[in-house]
Image (cartoon, rainbow, N blue to C red):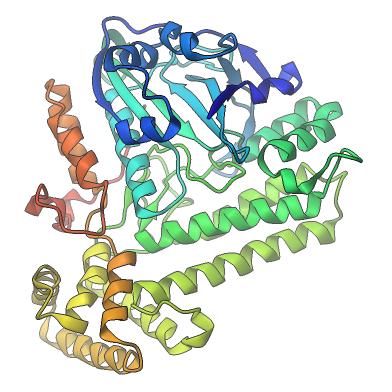
Amino acid sequence: MKFIHDYLKHDDRLYRHILPTPLDNPTLIALNRPLIDRLGLNNLNDNQWCNIISGRLADLANIMPTDIQPIAMAYAGHQFGQWAGQLGDGRGLLIAQLKDNQGRLTDLHLKGAGRTPYSRHGDGRAMLASTIREYLCGHAMNQLGIDSSDAIGLVISDTTIRRQYPEKAAALLRVSDCHVRLGHFQWVSMYTPDNFGDFVGKIAQSYYPALYHSGTKTVDIPTLLCTIANRTALMIANWQLVGFCHGVMNTDNLNITGSTLDFGPFGFMERFNPHWINNQSDHMGRYSYHNQPAIGRWNLAKFLQSFGQFISQDDMEQVLISYDNTLQHSYHDKLCQKLGINKPHTQHPAIIQLGNHLLDFMQTHRLDFTNTFRSLIALVDGQNHPYEKQLLHHGLAQLPQHAQAHWQQWATEYLHELRHTSKSDIISTLQQHNPIYVLRNHMADRAIMQAYQGDFAEVQRLFALLSNPYQPNAIATADDTRPARHDEIKAISCMS
C-alpha cells in the first residue's frame, strides 16, 4: 500500500481543502486491528490512532510521503425521491487514499470531523450511538461477505454536541474502496457541466481502468454504466438475502463500486415482513425492505440522466435491463445457496419455488429471518447439529397446529428436492450462506447503552462475535440470537 492523493487530480471545484476540528480529550473506544494490519498501517500505536480519529492528523502525516490534504467532497442527490440540490460532506473529510499493488484504491474518511463548507445547518459532529452502529455494522457486513465500508476505530470525547439532549461527540475513521457516489455525477452535471467528460474519464481511470483507453483518452461509457449498475444489483441482492434494510437509499448514499456505504437508520430483518421499514423518517415506506431493488433501479435511472449528452436513450434502457437481469440472477443463485444448493438457479427451478413458499410461510407466521434459514440444517441432519435443532424446535413451537402441518409438507418437498445432492455438500452450503449472528437492533442498543455509561466492553464483544458470523461462538449469549419481541421491532431515527 502507498499513500496517494488520487481525488485531487479532479477539478478543484469538486472539493474544498479543510482541516478537521479536533475533539477535546478523546478516548479510544475500539480499534480494528485486523483491518489496520491488512492496510499495512500497523506502525501506529493506540494513542496515535486515538489522535488521528479525533482530528489530530500529525501522526498520520508523519508516515505519509507527501503533505496531508484533507478534503470535503461536493455531491448532490435525490433524497426521498426529490431533488435536493447540492449536498456534500457535511461532517466527513477524505483525509487520505491508499493504492495497492493492483492499483485498487482505499479511502480513509474521518466522520465527525467538524463543520465543512457543505455542513449547511449542521455542526459537523457525530453522535456516539450512530458511530457505534456504523462501526459494528460495517464490520458485520464485511464478515458476511458483502462488500461494504469498514472502520479503523472510533473515539468519544469531552466535546459537547446538542441533539435531543446535550451529549459527548464521537468520531469514526471509515475505510471504503470508494466514496464517489451516484450524486457526484449529478453534481458535476448540474453545477460544472463543462467538466463532466473530464470527470468521467478520471473516475474510470481510478476505478475501472480497463474501460479507459489511454491512447485516445476515451471511456467505454455504456460498459462503464452497465458495470456500475451490475455491481449495484449484486450489492442489493446480497442485502435482501441477509435481510438487511439500508433505510436511506438516496442517490447520494450509493457509490459507484457497489459497496455498502452510509450506515444510518439500517437494520437486519428479524420477524419476516417484506414491507418492514427501519427508518423512522420513512413515513411512506419508500425504503422498505421490499422496495430496495426497485429503488436501486430508480436511483440508477436518475444517475443515467447525467449522461444524456454521452449515450442514447436506448443505451440507458439497456443499462437498466442489465441491472434487472443481474439482480434477478444473483438473488436466485444466492437463494439456492441459502437452501443448500450450490449450483446456478437455472438448474433447480423447483428450489426457487420452494424458497418463495418458505418466505411466504415466514411472512404469514412472523418467523425470524436469520434463525429460520439457519434451522434448515436441522431438517437435513438434526442429530449432528444440536444448535440448529434447538432453533428449529423453537421456531415450530411458535406455530399453530395447522401451520405445523403446512411446515411438514414444505419440509417433505424440500428434502425430496435435495435427494440427489450429498448431505455433506448440503450442510456445508447451508452453513456458509446462513449466518448465526447478525447485528440485531437490540444488540446494538445494549452496546450503545453501556457505552453511554463509559463501558465499551459490549462494543468489543459484539465486534468479536460478528467477526465470524457463520460459526458458533463461545462468547455468544442467548440474547444474541433470540428473535426480537414484537414490542422491540422499532424504526431507527436518522439523528446522527
